Image (cartoon, helix red, strand yellow):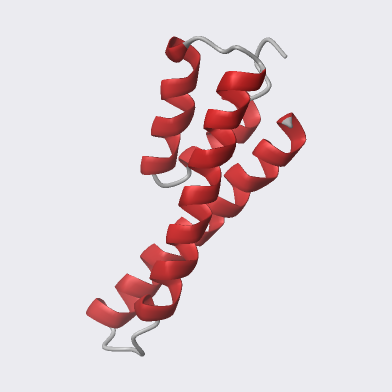
Length: 92
């Protein structure tokens, strides 16, 4: 479960970065509107991340004080990388 959660956290972070880049390309450089593609891809990755964190919370009996920062990391760009590297493996 931990390895899967780490992989999903990295995928979530990567799709978030690509979505932000797509918004910048579209808004700043008047480029193609890739947000209509990347939005749902990132949304799916975010929901998968959320699901796997909640599953780990129940299976490993994590305290909410551990689970909430892992969930919150998905809101911050690059936060998924931090969660995968530091938060998820702590105390496992």
